[in-house]
Image (cartoon, rainbow, N blue to C red; front, side, top):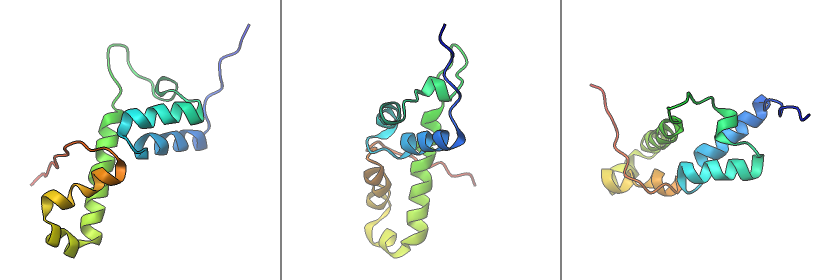
Length: 107
């Protein structure tokens, strides 16, 4: 009788999350790489309620938005020179996730 696999360590979980969020090619590629290199599937790391889907896309989108904000804070002159549209394209090229990102602002 086989025993269930042990729960991943905190270090493994952190490495999995970093791989999933920062892999070039976006979330789907990150999930694939994490499974390939770390042997951890999304379902073994995150408990998903039956009938519901994972919310990893929310974290992945948040990563891009945070990267965008950091770049704007660190390079304000470049931001002004390039303009919003081109400058806000940079985080997408860095992450390899070339998808439209709309920033939500709460006023």
